[in-house]
Structure formats: structure tokens, C-alpha cells
Amino acid sequence: MNNNQQLIKTSLYDLHIEHGARMVSFAGYELPIQYKGIVAEHNHTREQASLFDVSHMGQIIIKGEDFASTAKALEAIIPANIIDLEQGDMRYSVLLNENGGIIDDLIITRPTDEQASDGTIFIVVNGATKANDFKFMQENLAKEIEISFEKNKSLLALQGPKAASVLSRFSDIGEKLSFMQSDATSIKGIKCNISRSGYTGEDGFEISLNDKDASKLANTLLDEQEAEFAGLGARDSLRLEAGLCLYGHDMNEKIDPISASIIFAIGKHRRLEGGFIGDKKIQNILKDGAKQKRAGIIFEGRMPVREGAKLVDEQGNEIGNITSGTFSPILQKPIAMGYLPIKRAKIGTKITAIVRNKQVNGEIVRMPFVANNYVRAFSG
Amino acid sequence: MKYTSEHEYVKTEGDIGTIGISDYAQNQLGDIVFVELPEVGKAFNKGDEIAVIESVKAASELYAPISGTITQINEQLDIEPALVNSSPEDKGWIFKIKLNNASELDDLMDEEAYASHIG
Image (cartoon, chains in turn green, yellow):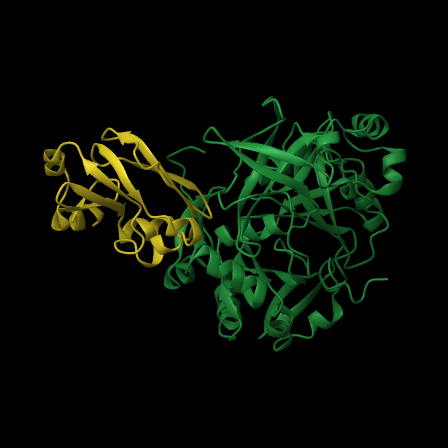
């Protein structure tokens, strides 16, 4: 980022300051890293409900003549199964380059009639990559598909085991949505699109609404006893415990989704049929097997093993590296994700990391590190 | 009590200095989850990297504010690193050092100068 480039303030900027936020530069925005403290906010999210301002994320709309034609156009560039989405259903996927490397990860929503007219698809992408993603889609989507960013929209996330009960005091939408479903509702007269999704491993909701209403909605939610603000610091430690990838760290343009252990981002029949950007490479990797794999590691002791730490074999040869790591507030142990050769990435395998020239012993474990609490009550 | 511009303090009794980080520093770092302590008996020159403090978010190096030899480390921090947050200038001290050259203390800030340094 250019130093003289002005950081963007979200609609909740004043409210963050009022709540004692420590602001940092992130993805071109000025965002709260923490309020009271990362660990307190982390634990609050696991026990109660936390409100995150994620307005930096890119909210993109694509529109074609009808759902089938927009879905078909989107399937021509991304590997997910879109055509079979029901109204209100969401799907996690990736943008790939010709080499099968991940340009970004994203969430696609087929809106309900209450949310948008037929032929519209919503896409949420990462903040730091949204300009590139937009350009990539613009260049690669069929000409007749219109693409635009949502204008003047904020995005808030209410996450935690009490999120549904907080929301239920204002709207019955929580009773209608299962994990990865979305619909429109109104809270105290404020129109919003709400999805049951998030990035913490907890039950929760993401709320897209007009900038002008964001403070009012945030205050409404924060007035509830269980709800408090949480910042980017807690968001990162929560997603790590949940075993979720962070773009630019755990995946990038040189890593394919099979190596990244997110093969679910590729629709089952699409693995066979192809027809998306990067399909040949992906099919080859599926046939030959990936050489490396993203694995979860728990280390002994208390010293965090962070991004960039080398992973070594018994002889001290470098065989992999850590892409994200922290001290888990819930497990009270260092947790990390990293890339290792397939045969070294099996659950239960011992591994050694090097931190400041010292060896730290760990073991490959199944992710998530902390169990997910998604609500799938209504799924078929 | 004397302070460095890197927010460490030195509390001296005779030729022994007790070193830790200031309340301002612990607040800036946030939740401290691990402190890598130096070895007792090891000698350091002023400015050498001597310890590492890790918060949830990042690792921060601690540099020797004065030259000397480590006489004691706060082993309680191995079990309870958060003492650096809750009691930075008392129970959360990090190590004690036998001063080589007490005149190095003259280069450090007194409490008033430090207060204006952190603004």
C-alpha cells in the first residue's frame, strides 16, 4: 500500500473510538484490532456474542438475465457447483488462476426474491484482494453479466453461542436460517440481508446493510447484555482455532485448493467435468495427488510458533513452514497451520519447528482445533 | 526507577538491576502469553537482544538496557506470563542483572522524562 494513500474509515469508526478501540491499518481501512483485549474478546465470542465490523470485505453483485445464466457464467470461472444452489443458499469457493493457484476465497449466495431480483448472485471476497478479484471477474465473466460492488454498504458479523438469541429479540430470521443460508429481514425498521455464517467457528450471522444504518444497528445489538464489540485480533485467533484459512497467509496464488485442504471448495461433479479456470491443473493434482498439504499442529509448551517458522525433519532439513500460528486462548497451547509433504502431514505425526534457532516439538492434529458450533438444524 | 525509550524499566538496589517492561508497554502489547527468559549467568552488553515477549498477536524483543550478567530470572512467568500485564513493575519483573557499569544508568530516563516520552 502506498504510504500517502488515505485509509478508509468504516461507518462505525466513531463508535469504535467511543468503545476504546485501538485502530490499525488493514486492507486499506482503519479498523479496530482490539477494544478491551484480544483474549477477553476471544473468550467472549466463545461464550456469549461478539460484534465485528467487517465492512472492509468486498460485497460484489453479479447479474445476468436469470439465475441459470448467471450461475452458468460464474461456473465458467470458479470450481463450485452454483447451478444447483437453492434460493438463500450460500457456498464457499475460490477464484483460481490457470495454474490452479488460489487468487482468493469467497462466499457465493443465491439471493431470495426478498433480497434481489432473479439473475442476481451475491459474492463476498476478502478486503485486501477485492480490487483484484473484481478486475479478474470483470475480465473473465461472460460479457452479458453485469458486475458491481455494493454501494455504501457495511458488513457486520454477530458471532457466538448467544448470537441467535440476541438476534431473535429483533427478528425471527434466525429460526428460518440454517448454517450457510441467507435472507432479508428488518431490524427496528432497518433493512438488512442476514446470513448464518461467519469466521469464528461459532454459530452466528453476517449482516449487510446500508452505511447510514450501521451505527444504529450496532448500538441496538450492543445494548443487549450478551453482545460486545470484538476486533481483528480476536477474529484471527478465533478463525485459527476453527481451522479456517486466511488468504495471503494459509493460501496464495502458488497454492492449490487440494494442497490447502479445502477441496470442498470444488464441486464434486466439477472435479470430473472441469469447465472452470485452472481445471486442467486441478484435475492433474487430483489424479496424481498433491505433494504437500495444509496441516494443523499443536506444539508443546507455551511459545507461539508463528507464520514463517520452518518445519524440519529428524536431520534438521527444512520440509515445510508455518503459515499461521498463535497461542490458543481456549486450549492454552500454541496452535498453528503449516504446509508439509503429504506423508508427513498425517494426524499423529510428530513434527519439529524452529523458532529463534530453538527446536519446538509438536504433533499433527485434526482441525478444527476447537470444535465448530454451526447450526445446521434445517439442512436436509 | 529508570526507563529506556523502548519502554523497559531498571530498578536498582546496590549493583543489581531489576528489569521489566513499563505499564505503558504491557498495555500496548496486549495479552502476554509467553516470555522467553535469558539464562542465569549469561553476560550481555547494552543493546543486546536479551528476552522475547510474546502476545497473542506478535513477538517483541527485549534489549538489554544496561550491560551486565544475569543473576536471576522470574521463573513464575513460565507458568503465569500474564503477570507482566497485571503487575508489570512488581510481580511481572523479568530478570535481574549485575551491573557492569553503573554510569550507564545516567543515559536512561527518570520517571518524569519517561512520562513525557510516552506523552
